[in-house]
Amino acid sequence: MLAQHLTPSTHPPANHGRPLHIRSSPQSDRLKRIFDLLVALPLSILAVPVIAAAWMLVRATSAGPGFYSQIRVGRNGRPYQIFKIRTMFHNCEAVSGAAWCTKHDRRVTRVGHILRKLHIDELPQLLNVLLGEMSLVGPRPERPEFVGPLSEQIPGYVDRLTVRPGVTGLAQIQLPPDVDVEDVRKKIVLDRCYADNRNLWLDFRIMLGTVIYLFGFSYASVRKVMGLPNPLVDDRSVNDTRIAIVTGSFTMNRSSAEVDGSLATGGTPIPCGEVQ
View (cartoon, rainbow, N blue to C red):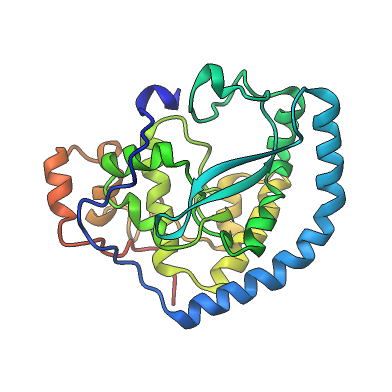
């Protein structure tokens, strides 16, 4: 279980005193925000009956509220409240404590398993997009209890906080759910790849790839059909030392001091093969 490898913390995320080096411009941010609004508004209207049906199903099959809110860490480390349809037993963390969901998590209800499989539980996050707290596409938001420990263990983790978190993302449709910290390391490579190479064309392909993924296509098929960048499998960048620094032990054997020293000059862009 992932929770066995990571101790929750209430401390703020750390960046070891280094500035973040993710490229951005006010113009690209404005265009992305306009794109989010133009797509999220009609999607929200279409999603209302689906959300309502899921809410009633949850209320009818388990005790507790139909909706669920939780604090997540957003852009620049700013906390915000994320909205979801409840898929676990009400107040289950009073027993388990703060822990990530695992593949056969007993806290998840029977209806919750279905909602998670279809990702219907994520639809209320369209409200977070409309409020400007999230984007349609971006790194998935993490809980503050885990951001601190993860930023300590994974070099470059905080770079993903320079963009708005997303409802879907480059890593989510190319990699399976995390089961340990090493899986998080792999996703950080794709998160940083997206953060440094983001554009509306890439966002569009990720969104369309998400639809394809929901129809049951494999991660490899989604990547191939949509031409998505993935430096973990791209022959042009798989041996790049910048990736090895982030991914750490699953591709190389480095001490924590060596890794920290390699990143002391700042976060260099992760190569993605994505044309700007």
